[in-house]
Image (cartoon, rainbow, N blue to C red; front, side):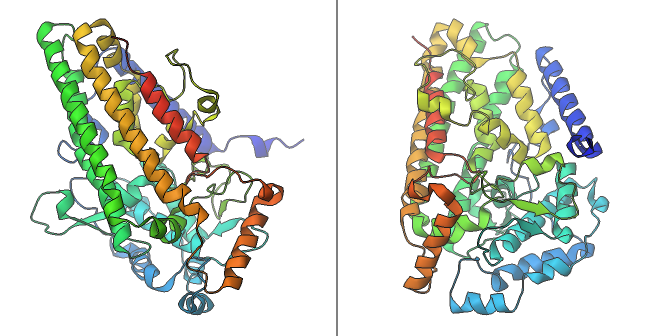
Length: 476
């Protein structure tokens, strides 16, 4: 029997060893009480996980990629777009240019992280444009990504330690330019660099999330201050922690206000039918549907496990907040009230999996927080005057997650029951409905759960996150 096909590739072994070593080193530093400063993890003191400057354009050697991304919005349309314009463009075969291009070497950028990040943005956007503009097949077949895109994307991703797919970083934290280059990085001075739909709705959608990331920088300062306190049980230290928890609550409430502002500038119908289809990943239709094949790449490469596409669950700011407040998404701690049967059915590995869609250095920062012996929840548990400010922060975070659920309901669940406006005629709409039934297979008669971009049961996942947050509250 040939066992070679089930053995990990050399790159897979190397990836696993480096990941394990990084986790061990992070755990050692944390348990020894020595926490590395945030600057070691590519975290800017002013902009946090957002780069302090816009990413530079790629040098002349990669002009082919930059030009293709600039032209893509004008020549490519979603595969289910049956408008006359889309049919004409499709007949001209614009997407085939990707299939004929060379696989450019990216070694030149290895020691230039901002260029690598820009390359990741350009290549992942091109992959999404390519995959989602291909004509649909019945029955569905795997989407084959040309080697000219697949090979350099996987190499860039491996160096950065991030998934080889469009991520939250590619659409939010790296996807902006300055309106006035001589002025500071603020949400009012940022403009969207790339957009699939070209709509103001998409710009607003991304801008709100960028505002959350920038506002979240204040959370990172509170976390950093907490980890620098020499003696947490000393009276002045306790007073500072109480004050910072009160400030943390206010920041979370401000983030909730930002999230609610999504509705003022982004139409749910446009989001669901014109924006969301472009960002879907390989597993967006669930595990039973064919995914994507990266030509010229080892199919067992460990990076290819993570192809879900962007999600708010990839926000490093929100992960840091969860870890700081000790929110138990994996249900490892015994807390009250006990998890419901629906909570237990949720994807408990979702948050850990989302970390692979972050920059490797940002993931290391989260590992340091996770293994830190300085639990603020335990401190509040043994310090009576900290329980109320800690519980207020947890309550604010639960409210934020409840608001997020309402947004998801409005923009995804409700919109899933509407018709696609891109269908040019009733007959085309009927064909799309039939195709959807075919994709659902034998279970078409029984309506399944609404899936998030990563192919997970969206409602169950969001409820589990809200309830896990609620369980972190302490009894007074």
